[in-house]
Image (tube, rainbow, N blue to C red):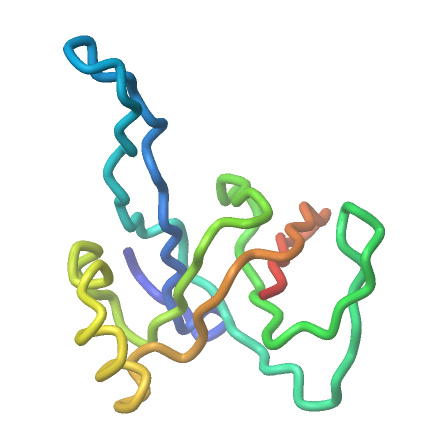
Length: 128
């Protein structure tokens, strides 16, 4: 995936498979968690403490606004996301040590839960 000056970073989303019922025991087993590269993006830190109103009507102070190219698949509210400076192997994001070291080194510039996703006319926006 080529990055452009307008979108110099990469957006990853954590997808969890639906739980399935074990036919032998009847217990429910959670599906695997899989990080997926969703798009190139641009993270903008909320340095002034601006607020946004979520789809549920709650007003929140967000940490970052993520600008995303038009046509990117919608990311649902509540989905864990990570924004990186360079493209990384998605499986590495399952490793907590890798995540902590990447935050310290600056590889991961933002991470959190999607609080709102807006499909705009020229681009999409996501707030964490």
